[in-house]
Length: 113
Image (cartoon, rainbow, N blue to C red; front, top):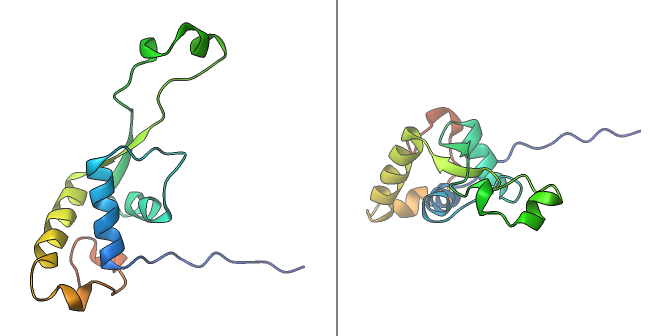
């Protein structure tokens, strides 16, 4: 019997930037998202929040069959907004090439290093 151990997921700076932009720009629902979003939740850049949709907006039939309403969506925290701003500033600098494909340092949180 073999036991498989999950390898920790470490995205690059570019993947973190892309995911932070995705969360900022369009709804990322909890039940359907990339592994990078889970990592962003774990380090405090993203939280799951109630969707702005409301239950009364659901049709009578949807409520009758047990629809629970809108799924939670990802929202940037203050740290996430700071990290996004920092990464966008580095992206337009001559230093982006050095950071782009480097693994994101979880312990540094919002400091590309």
